[in-house]
Amino acid sequence: MKIKLIPLAVCLGVSLTAHAADFALTSRDIADNRSLTRREVFNGFGCEGGNISPELSWRHAPEGTKSFAVTVYDPDAPTGSGWWHWTVFNLTASTHRLPSGAGAHLPVGAVQGRTDYGQPGFGGVCPPVGDKPHHYQFTVWALKVEKLPLDEQASGALVGYMLNANVLGKATITPTYARH
View 1 (cartoon, rainbow, N blue to C red):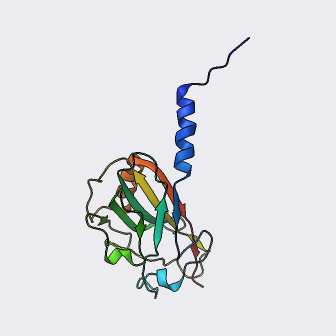
View 2: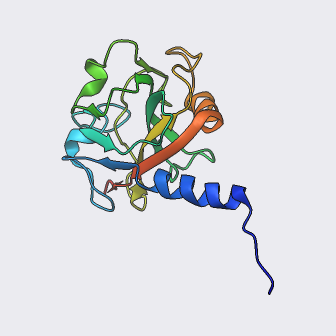
View 3: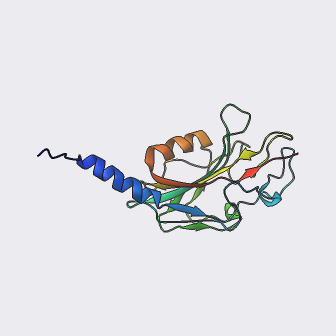
């Protein structure tokens, strides 16, 4: 009789993956593959909108989560490197929701990095007129560190680098938007 042993790392990997898969992001304002509204559109750069971040809530963070971050990224922007619309980091592990318009009143200790519009804070969507619908990735990141050593001048790329170096899990909602 031949016994097949499964390496412990494989068993742990399956367990960790299943737990990370439970991590979920929801919103009362946005949904996958649904168009964003004028409320989430940037006010400037040729666009006229409310420039208000949507409500975001998350649950079932991976075990060991010490902080959270939220990013909004447009991989379809015609830049060669996408477009960072929002980075928020150093949200405490007890934070599980950002209300609509949170950029104006974040929890104590949270930091907003610089968007590709050149300033910290939420920068709403503003794709080129006539371009195909863009996909906006609203992502919450569960991190293994309490704080990222960054400030409000950190670029989206630098924040993204630090997030990927410290991520335990992430959950995303991807709405769309186009200007005609």
